[in-house]
Image (cartoon, rainbow, N blue to C red; front, side, top):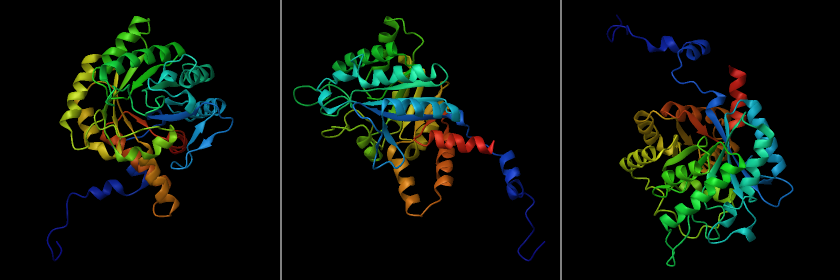
Length: 333
């Protein structure tokens, strides 16, 4: 007894006494294989182009992309998500470069496949926004609205050329109604039943995408609020989830990750397919900017954010720190 009552019998602090103890009882473990590296490849450049809003991230040349893929593989990263950045002159209203077999994204898929084969899971963004002169994720009607069903026809073509280039996983990110079913049918029609679909199931209209628009040279006019989700909504995500699974999604994703951990946890609890989360450009930029100011410990903040996403239920995390984080994690195993 002390003057304020009995000493506590239960002492949770006993399990926090040393680093070895904390490691032994950790409930969430982050592994290099949980990580996927998003990478940008830009047409017509001979040197990598730094992305100003994302320190340490670049628009790759074809050669440096191949090198980045090898480095990710050697670090233990499981996959690489490719985004193509065409020359401005090749952008048009229909995003034709996105379905050109010799377009930059298809070329990049073939390059990476030739370099790493099946040892690294090669994923490709399946969306038109990088390739359209208006910057939207689909084709437009005469009055400027995104035409859902006309866009689905373009997505079917994109899926086929990406599969022909050798991709393992296509990742439709446009949030068009019915996109997963159309893409699955398009892939099966050409005998690509083994190509998986990672559905962007809950993709929110977020303020955190800003740096990404620089990364892909976006020509966006207006916003994407008529097809990306309202940040206020959660039940809507569960409806999108049910539809994606019914249509044949092999894996599902929540994007962004950090501001939507509640959505991620609910999705992960509801499904028996693999769940991914995308730690997006704005999340990356905030940590880098605060660290550059000396306001936070960069390495600890990176690990903490990734652990939080993993704890919320993500089995796979797309992060621009994938290779670096994987190397650091390997040193602690």
